[in-house]
Image 1 (spheres, rainbow over the protein chains, first blue to last red):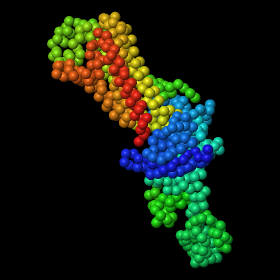
Image 2 (image 1 turned 120 degrees about the vertical axis):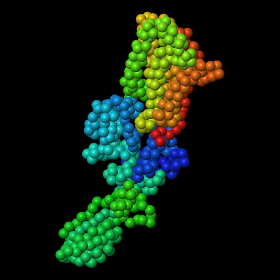
Image 3 (image 1 turned 180 degrees about the vertical axis):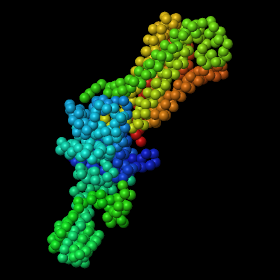
Image 4 (image 1 turned 90 degrees about the vertical axis):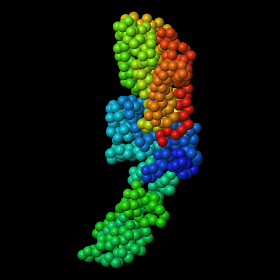
Length: 317
Length: 266
């Protein structure tokens, strides 16, 4: 099977309010697919449709080759799900709770739960309602991963996790991918998705507005370049850089015989490197591309295609 | 790992503290009320006092038969304090079973696993049934134990029938709560529906007994279906028990049907 998930013209109405207006995407089996979008864009609703928690108003959904509703319990045993908001109440220990979820999900290898809990630094013997948000999230991750499902559907998986645990979680995702598992995850920030995902879909107001491979985003991404050079003038350096395709926002400072120039570079960097080779550089910084900026270009309206400034970034989040 | 009835097991065993607490409450009520019968209900003084009360009041409280052991047990334990405790327990459990679980956000994760919605409702309803039956069985056993020492003179078969009706009456409120919670996805609506069945049943019985003009209220009162002929004294009307248990089962089926058709957690 080539596609682990596919949706076609998926719509969902709650009463009169339509929250998904025809969502189309496909997730290749064995890949990591990230959906990003602001809160309320429809990420959680889409995920719930995959698990038959919510029934689509129209359109077609296929998960592991089956319709979620027709697939029933057999299909859901092959999926690991982490809900966006995890509520665990009751006076039971994490171990007891996981034993319960084990009884209603796919087969769990012996020792798997303890191994996962140890990796994430989760104490299985404390009561679930006394756990902090981060520890509840770890418990949720353990229940999603423990039966090594073919498909993992993770809604905001790193929310509440501290950076070290996030790294461990990223390692778990890579291992899952090596084992051939497919991962479908959501986030409201790209930085989280870009580290792990192969493909990113941008969901906004109930529509997929772009599906890009992360490497494609990287190519189209905007980098910042900053260098200091001797033996040239601000005018000459500016003219040199201005002739390089993809360079914009050039700013030059001249002081005491050297100049400091900063600019943005879009697309290929080879022409820029060639141009820089003619200069007597004393310092050079070429930053890693900020995918967030290239994505935000897609978020913003077509009329406004310039690099987003900080204000727009905050607004778009 | 395959375990039989995993959802039932969780619903039943994780709530053992609650079950034990209600059992302790019912036991305390039984031990408090029944041993008082020889000095209270059975005494001539008490009968004089009850005769002095307005007839409407004794009817409303079902105290018109309080001078006999079975009548006293019927009026105080099965008809009042036990009815109250059992109904509250059953309504609380019923409202929490589906509506409360959905409202707290936990049902979503359960349904994302290898279970069907019908299975979730049925197994949790089974847990409710079993807990209510356990409490009714406890009351049956305790009344049997106190029968001689408290001079109650209750016939075992009548006590058994009363316990079946006692459980059925509580189940009706509990399954009404379960059904309303399952339809709405809200615990509060479940509590309201369950409480309405219990309270209106009691009130319709108390008012309906006052005069022939309002006797039709008795037909609407589940309390009167169960206790209209004082089962502890006169034996159960099994048709009434069939109605109580049958409607409860139908409410569970309705809950399963409703949950199976709608979106969860929205």
